Picture 1 (cartoon, rainbow, N blue to C red):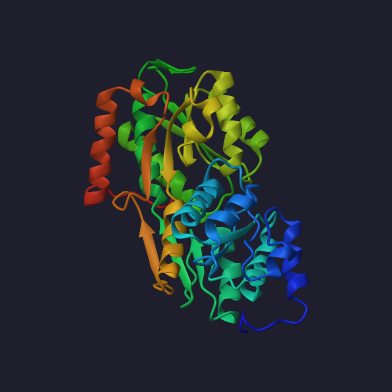
Picture 2 (cartoon, rainbow, N blue to C red):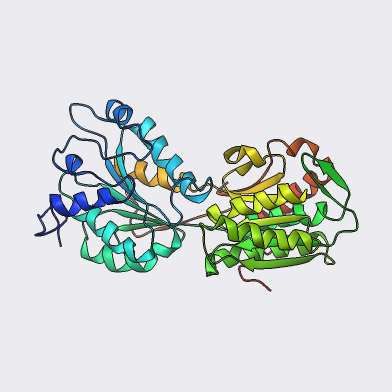
Length: 376
């Protein structure tokens, strides 16, 4: 199937169907090769001015986001930062869709691949849940470039990017284990020196999220083997009410720091931390900045720089150097993940704690500390 060949029933009308999902290509966008695809950020005029020249944009990129969508202040928003950076620095144009169910992944991947006006030079598939869909889509569109974040599809037209989430999670676990056993009072939370309990809230129970759990638990244990880790999964990346209920139960059971790897569900963790006068650890983005209303309880974030592979893959396409068939792994050494202290609370964290966390970072990079990828 050649994406540059008109596919009966999936031409302008088929691509226009994407407009029903937030930010999808509009019919107007498919009718002119020089039109800029819809930007769900609501600033289409600026996008056209900045990315469209007489010869058109440097590349057209289709973004298929993970479940939970934009506005999660975490994973998807980090991916969007990458494509916006490419828009500003490389002169590309992009369209984006936010699937509401995993069953929608194949149709959105195919519709971008089938588009002839414009031709999409790259389709970015964000999140591990797109793996099975892309494994079926990619072979049918051999001349279409795809990139995939958080999973691997072994096809020559797919550039894969994965992270060592367990390494960054070890770092924030080490921090939590050190802080929960001392008295600390800053912002709107506090810890008690007699506390021996911290928590982990996952979104969907999947191998990728268990890597976050495994690293966090290992880091806590490295700090103090007497500290217990309570764990629970919300079953969703977009259910803040469930996240709040789980975290509230953990705080009321004695945890004074809770780490989440749950997308928009994590907002509920922050809400619970503030109400209970405890602390939380964010994920993917520096959530003390993306969720400023809770900066006074966000001790740190396990930043996962999803924007890096998005930008890099687009840059490769623009430079005619697409790395299809490869897998790039990003960990602490590559600065793909990191423990980033909270914007408001970071300066209050004791220096000896920061020094200890810095030491384990070097230990992980050197191989002296082995971080598990499965909970023990």
